[in-house]
Image (cartoon, rainbow, N blue to C red):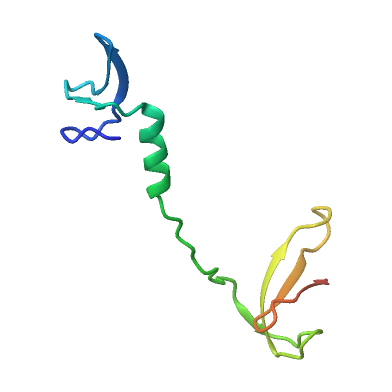
Length: 104
């Protein structure tokens, strides 16, 4: 939970046998019989997970997919061997997502 005055995280404190949440700015809030574990549980249940689609940002090239025959694929290069040898080119089919490599 966050302080409504300054936005800092409220910290638990037990004062005179009562559990409260307090902030460094002076704000306090009583728990009214709720334990800190119950508050944490409520906050965790309220969270939603956003699912985002993967967006391909690699450039496209015209090359035939070995698996489905599609003529467009994404490509990228990566150094997989020694620095004195050429990079390996990887391709990923834009239709079936099949990935293959080409050694130069």
